[in-house]
Image 1 (cartoon, rainbow, N blue to C red):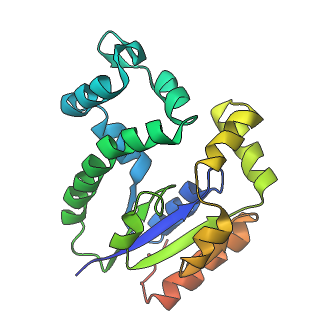
Image 2 (tube, rainbow, N blue to C red):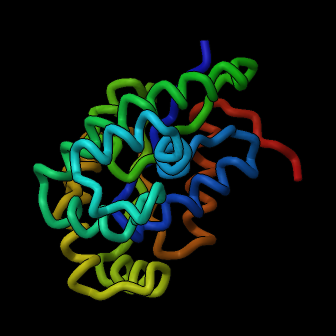
Image 3 (cartoon, rainbow, N blue to C red):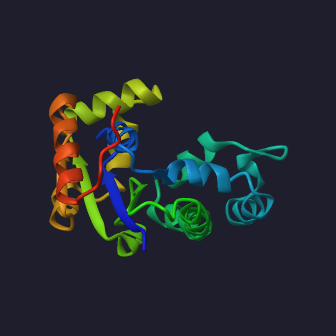
Length: 198
């Protein structure tokens, strides 16, 4: 039976970089954000989003993601409404993906809101990626061309590191990439996962 490693961390912690490193080492990785983008292209999901949030967030048939983000990242109830539409679809997308990787002992599920969405319950092992708050804020401002205020409001929507760490099996501090990669190698050894030779 393939086991699932849940990989999580707050916005800007650099968890995708860590996920990519696990993938380079031979662990198949499912990125929940990419899964969500995929399912958000389905006509059924778009129809549900339109019915829940109205036509003003659409430009013709095309969803305006920035408008939707503005609504949900400023209101927990609206975010919960969107998650109730998207999460079940992502879950079934992940299950289909898992079937293609049944020959692996472990696969990785990377999600920023692993705990908040309840998906941690489906994981056998959980890893939290951390980084100092100021580093995270800088990373997101640079990556998303956004403002400090917007980053902080998104952070408020997520669990804090302390809470995540208390529920995790492993913690990777991603302030220094070389050291973070060494932590990945240690975890692979503990879980007895053979590393892919590069």
